[in-house]
Image 1 (tube, one colour):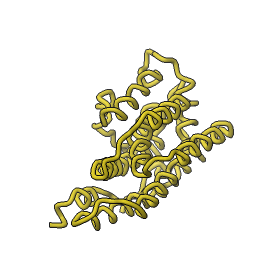
Image 2: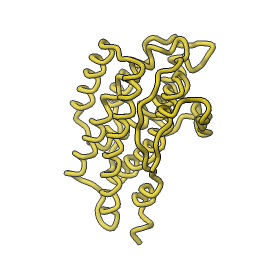
Image 3: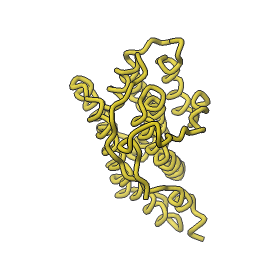
Image 4: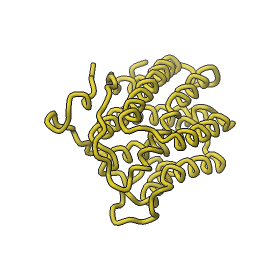
Length: 246
C-alpha cells in the first residue's frame, strides 16, 4: 500500500508554520560572533532547496515509492523558503556582520560547486552542519532564536530522514572531499571559541565533536539533552517572538 512507504510516513509527520519577526534579546556572553556567523550561513537554505530540486530531474527511487518520494521532496523544498525567511527575521533583529556575510557567500559557492549528487550534499549539510547550528541558536541565543531553532528543527528532522533514505536507495556515499568542506564550514563558524571552555556550549571542541559524530554516525550523543525541547511560555516573551501555526 502506498501509505506504507517511508516517504508518505515522513510527510504525515510535518506541521505547517509561518515565520514571524522577532526581537533581539540577550545572547550568551562569548557566543555573539558564533551567532553572527551561524546566521550568515542562512544563505545556504535556498541552495539546499535547489539541490533537492535538481535531484528531482535525475535519478530517484522508482516503483511504488516514486510518487510519495516526489511529494515529500517538493514539500521539503517549500520548507527551505520558510527557514530562509525565519532566519532573515533573526538576522534583521540582531544585525549582520558584512564580513561574515561575505565569507558565508564563499562557503555557499564552495558547496554549490562541489561535484556530488545534490541529495548527498543536502544530507551532509543538513545533518552535520544545520543540526549543529540549530542547537547553537538554542544554547547561545535568545528567546527568538530558541523559538526559530525549534520550528526549523522539526522540519530538518524530516529532511534528514528523507535524504538519508533516498541516499541509501541510490547507493550514495560520503567521501573525504565532502568531509573537508564540512569541517572547514564548521571551523569557520566556531572560529572565535576556545577549544575547551568551562561552559561546553562555548567550546569549539564540543560543537565540532557533535558535527563529527553526526557526519560519521548520523547521531550526536552530546546533543541528547535537545530531545526534551523547551516550550517558550507566553509570559517569557512578546507575541512577535511566537511563531504562527496552521
